Image (cartoon, rainbow, N blue to C red; front, top):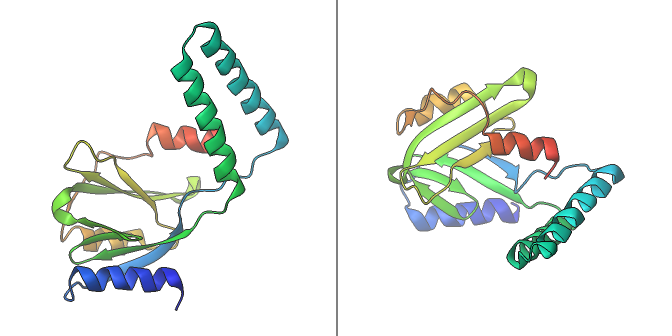
Length: 174
């Protein structure tokens, strides 16, 4: 048994011994993009131009944010994403070591567009301070998942596509 599975089981056992696992799968912590030299040159030039603009306009906080963003991009590019276990249970959702109770979740939606290679599960939280949780479904059957989640949550049928931020992140490879 690998470390991820063991950690996931430990978290579930600590939470409640009567939790029933419905479905589980594994995903990378984040999507690692293949970037060309041209991508690095373009983003380097854009970053440099924004840095110069920040200094000329004496907006030093913006300059610091640009530099920190560049360092984060370089550091994340140098490491491989960890594998995170996802478990949908009778009590809530486990994402790695984090547990989200169904009482915290407002609704869910599944975007399934095989021709566009899109297969995502979204959880919208009741609290406005928590951002939407987006999980790739990899090899999970979306119909089976939907059928089981409907027992605990309502479905947002109005969401029919990925968020703009996810589309831009995929296009820009960030």
